[in-house]
Length: 256
Picture 1 (cartoon, helix red, strand yellow):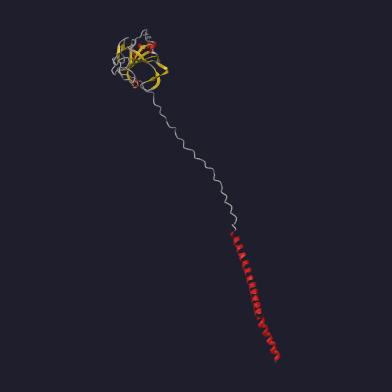
Picture 2 (cartoon, rainbow, N blue to C red; picture 1 turned 180 degrees about the horizontal axis):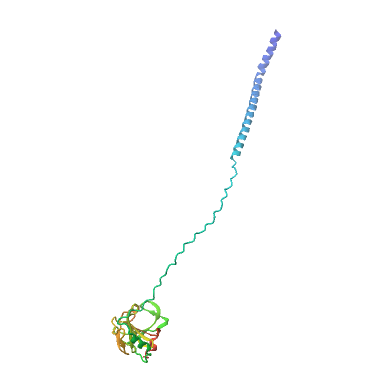
């Protein structure tokens, strides 16, 4: 009996002396087992997490871009031919008509006499004065009125306003009219295709169409009716033509 008691006393004594270490050991063991179990759980969770991430990455990978549909080219568009239209008609105005002659028309008998006549042998100057602007159909001369350079088919004889104008030679009055640029004008046919033309006359000449005139007969007076030369000095605009072509009157007038 005493021996059993002694044995338990030793046990209790040992436990009493070593109990702290035993408890510590048990705690460490429990902690180790717990750590091992937790580590296993975490490993499983990590595996599951890796699988989830991998699955997400696989899902996130974009699928190949689908090929674009093939578009068939459209057939070429052919423009419809335009309806043929008649070309626009361009109206070209007629040449300006000859100035309307005042007075009676030229009798046929008078025209026949004019056409078969010969050139006059002597002419006189149609008015007193000096040449202000010469005849010039090849070189340009300056116009004070128009402020430009142009040809000049006659001669301008400077003289006083209202000065008498006479026929340069005998002949027949062929035209009396008002020219848009050169004012009141008288044309005398001297025969043989030679004509003398008197412009910038006063509005009322003293002759009419069909009148026969002798050299030196008064046919009118110097006026200011020529709009193209109204800015020049008072003058008679005098021209001569042979078969319709302008000639220099100085070649037919006596030398002064």
